[in-house]
Length: 201
Image (cartoon, rainbow, N blue to C red; front, side):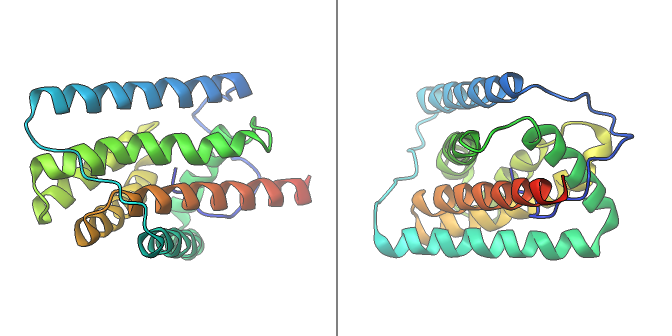
């Protein structure tokens, strides 16, 4: 989830049906398990090795900084691109509206771990730690965020974020960087959105 920290009311003409809290949490859990299984199957059939996770302060801080930069950039794109703003508002309302505050931890961690494991941990090394690998993993990451054809602008943004995360992984050779960046982005965006929704309620 890589949406901006802004919060107008949900679009009344949204083509997506509202979800309940349990549906959102179940979808998060099922998606995480599916991505884990795909990652394991890929590693079983492909000799490419999983990108390592090295717990270092430097790369951890780099991931935090990258997550902050992505969140700030998303706010700028949100203000400058009306089509993306509408798409992001629809997606945010669909996913975040039914969730309670403690649920945001899962919203940050589960996609941050499972999506990064597949797209940057497995797919990127398998295709190549180069521009082709970065492009394919980023495009696949973007398509994962397609909830409807009307949400194409959100897919464009998710693909751009995927390019940044994949580049960070290639430059450091450490899966920790995109995991932390992805988790920080999800948590910050979610907390800011929920806070502003409560203020305008």
